[in-house]
Image (tube, rainbow, N blue to C red; front, top):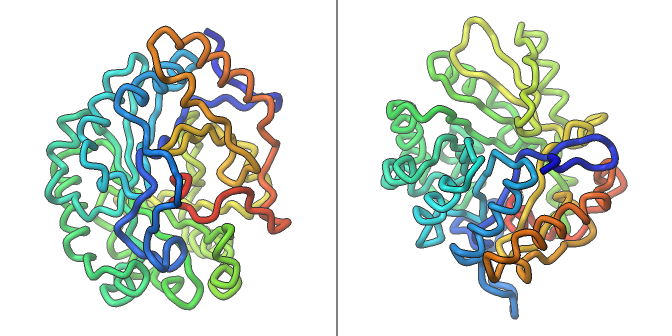
Length: 327
């Protein structure tokens, strides 16, 4: 099978699959009032549907899967989801993005199920600031889980921090101290406008390029980007065990290296996080015999993928908040 590619020559070995829209945090930039189920919304994909979906993408060259939410650990059968994904032929990297609330209690189960990469949302190393951002005073427990992941030898441990002006954008020195002796990847993510956060975005958006310039001035050097890597521009420094990545969606040519597609918890293919439409794949996930039809459905839609997002124009597509599509 020819690997999935769009009309701009981009290939897509990387799928981000949301398995549940719900989240137990109330992050100011995403769900400040908590998660509220949308009336009439179908339930999330079943294990069988997930297995069929991933087999279809695998047939099109996908080999990296990232499980997302909402918060994926809210789903009671998460271990079964991970085991199902790890068993799909061709999948060699199984990652998950989580807020880490269950990390210290469930890490062993997740790794036994096949998880080999994890991103944990840690928007601040200051306990009070973390609680203000997330609505939960859980920083110490989450950082303990990070230490457990490092000690367990999980191949890839990364932390995600959304940059917020006036809230956490002055924490670089503290983060550098943290990274000096820990082999973790830190991702600074530029705040993105979504359908329902315009006022918050205007108050707290800061360009990630400002931080990137600080890193370059301090001797951090850019690394080559792997073919199945996420959107971060990654930097390293000889004096630090950890690495820093910058995700700057408002930067020039950000979308040129796009290599990932998304599927929502209810089975809609999203060609872009900020796209104007979703493509229902669930009808093709009801029987094993539908694999060829599923592959054709995915391949037939990739030509609709735009060259870039339209965030610079204030167009956020059908994404009301990041939890709705998995970020």
